Figure 1 (cartoon, rainbow, N blue to C red):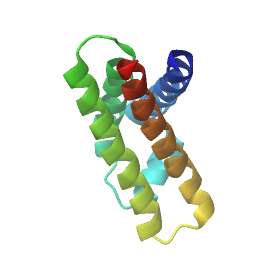
Figure 2: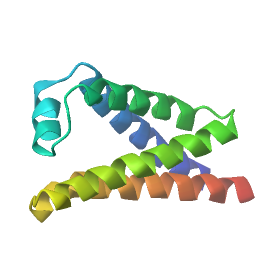
Figure 3: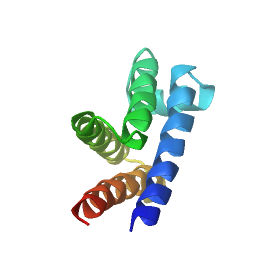
Figure 4: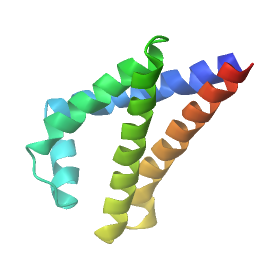
Length: 118
């Protein structure tokens, strides 16, 4: 179970680092998506830094309360992204990434608590 947890969590952390850095440097593709969803460009670096910090928090074994907050923040982030795509009328194909991210965050969180029980 621990191996599966670490595989899922490392994939999640990699995704967060990649997208977080893209947001922090205002990669043109990230700016286009953000503007399409109706958000101001100045919010991108803030979200990017939050993603990078969350990635760090979920892979470090210490600070369990910080890890819980990171997971909570990630749930809000990906639910917000999913809802935003739905609200602007994007097709279901645009929902795949946020829905997949939500599933991976939930799986990592579930597996974290499963490994702590054993």
